[in-house]
Length: 624
Image 1 (cartoon, rainbow, N blue to C red):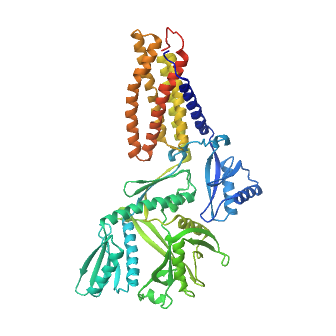
Image 2: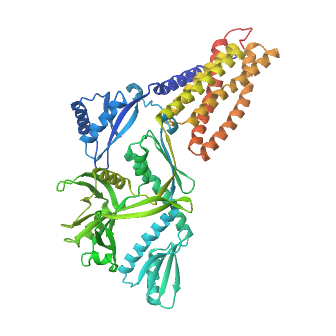
Image 3: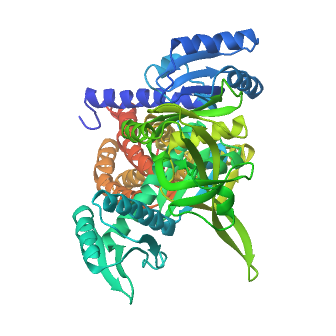
């Protein structure tokens, strides 16, 4: 008989409806103010930590809804934000700085839904509030840093091979890709030996001889492929470092992605302290460990008599100090850092852990210097704004200061402490930056936007209102023009919205304002298929076909047209997703999901309802 589905199709439709309803359900329960407690690489969060959190809150008579331990750490839920902020202060004062205590909003989904991994969608920056940064990577600084590393490598390699040189320095314009390392020699034979040694080790560099009346020079430049790779690495490494720093800030669902050749977009939903976020994300702090030059006077160096192989620095109290040029260790080998209080001096300190290679380097360097003074140099690149010819320009300056000088009492290994910091806040920030790693190249914040939580809520309300208004208008029009069949289409449209939300939730996608626009567009487009089917049924009825035949022909012959229209739109949406940026991707993904779900509900879903209503019986009239 016509207009009958096999049993498995009815079961499939019912199953999809049930699963979609269950996985869309978590979005109705809202969120709880929460605190996320996680450990660093050397501190683990376990059951003992959980018991300590519970005891701390109970002693202070702070009520909590629940405290659970999962793979991300401890999550404590509270009734409102006032209790949440009070609990944050108590926990931070009770736990050492090896733990990251971050404010969070945790889904208030019932446990039975969480047990089947039914979770709500994430809300993007424009809906939840937060901060948006557009950062530009300083490519010139990346090339300069690469040349500086080569300069140090050349010096070490030539010394190992006992090749005597007069000087190694940087020359040329990095911005014009003409920067290079210049080695100075007294005779051509030594230069040839140096070139031979360097070429064996550095095959990806360009070597060129240059002479004057007195000296012989070897100019070493980065090849074009090496420059391209250095710039690409700088952006990718900065993205990784920024992700690490954002993780330390405890931000849920951040967006960190490359834009163009040298820019990075960072979106931090839920972050309101923009000054703190800028300070942490843009900081370029690192450390260098150097031996103090004790045989010569720093006061004499201030007057201009700086001995070869040394460099003049200043301590934090302004006193000059003479350090050796050779760097014993850099912050690149640091794998963990935690701030604390020094037991002897009572001042803030940072405990540092090196990786295996760094531990070996530091052990060998301190082994031969027991009893001598070693310094810790804090290096930070800052950006100042100055007026030049009536225009505001950004000028970078490198700040180097000696934060600690101590005598090496014994051979040091991969774990040690540094002190001499001004405050516990500085120690905490320095530890955070060292844990997250140094930026491969400095970054400038070229654009900053802040979305307040109230504006985010307004966006949600307006977006939700637009969906409701569009949905109600479509319902009214379909019921008015197609009567009973229109109500069937309305039922399918409602189910389509549920399925869109369910798919976004199952994917744990981030819903943005453009995403809501895609849903609104889908609401209008979803009934197109039913309009085509219903008009075809009307046409067949006018041509004299019986109602059962008209239904069968209407659905059968309209499918090709519906498929063509939806596939072309889907192709456009896929292209938008592939080449678009964040907001466009949000629009494209909801539009794509809406097209696929509407194909199911508008064709298979409505046909199932129509078959149940009109199949297996003789009819003379259709409500269409």
